[in-house]
Image (cartoon, rainbow over all chains, first blue to last red):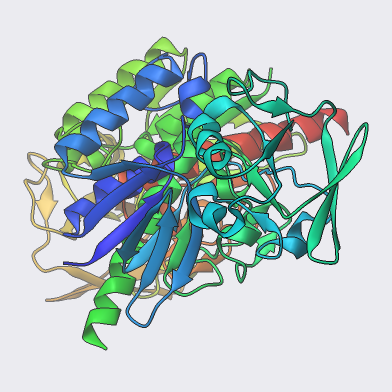
Length: 280
Length: 280
């Protein structure tokens, strides 16, 4: 049975999951945190659920996908790689194999440091577990957006000296060496990366950037964008064959009803894609 | 306050109505009969309403739009006319004035007689109440698709001799002169229209064609189509400024979730249109 990975479990992801289950696909929803819907105080314009809080709506959707036999995983998708037979998605520390991918992660705004893009894999890493051991005993920095990465930071501190920078104010993991001042920019200097913050600059062998989201250009570098939105056609197909997108990630208006509709259209296009692939 | 007329009360129409109410518009939904959703045995892929019959879903939507203060009318939209300030829509025997129109009538397949298009207003009419008196005492034909026009037929019979043809088999109104054989084609001959049926041809001063749907080319002749679907852009705008479309009328896939999403997008585009119009 074909396996579809849906990255994001908000209205678009849940809608697509229901339709794909009806079409006989195995479906996994991967979540990296709460959906935008969950944070909505009240939604007054979703047909069928009257004047409900976003979190109650999301609970309702979640129960429905569970009943439909959708598998659920937690983890941040870090990289989508095309393979001969389909895709491998690096999610948290797992590798998930699938035949098609639906991007339904919500608005994809990810602030980046100046110079960050060009240094990925060359002294900049998004994954402590993946790359930590390469820097055992050497000086590294962690740039963290929030407190959700305490475990990664603990692991790094167990193998090397760590300086901790905060992109946004939050409670730092206990005992960590916090460097004052917001991180700003990165540049290479010999084998090292210089991290410039509001107050200072310091060299590191590696800078681990830990955010609850990954920029699309990191997740799937070949993906065509429309500004910050993923470019899709009328069937919600992206520029990468086998990768589809639905919901807020495709741009405004940011509405649950629209996301549900796009998820539905994407699911039917994925079913068609899998069907044609099987025949070929 | 701006007034939006939504033609059709299925998922697309109800979704648009909810969002337009939130945006402060007066909204009327005009229905000519049950929605396609109402006839669906069960819907398994609509987020929020789990494994429900189509008629229960529709009831749910209907309650919600009532609560939201949406006005509802029954009647078949026969003609949309652009006026200097907005639109006048001929609905049943009423004229409804509005600032914008949303077409959400569902799949728009309407079988037509050969030659019908060219004779509208020249011996072919879709409205007994509107045009009947013009033919007082003169021989007319009624071509009816189903039994829902008994009242129109009674009115015509009270003022002139009527022959009754059936497009599809149904119970004819009591006492009417039924002509055997399906109606096929129309052509002009002098001041009269010749109606050709399977068995015969006969001349009439007017042929009244009574169907529970009106072809888009009759409703709004300037509207651009994509085959049988109304052509829309990504904001659900049609080729006629101020007229939008959502749901099955825009083509496949025919799905409630998709219709709800399109209704939402259309409503936001209508709100923007009304806003810009008010400023201008």
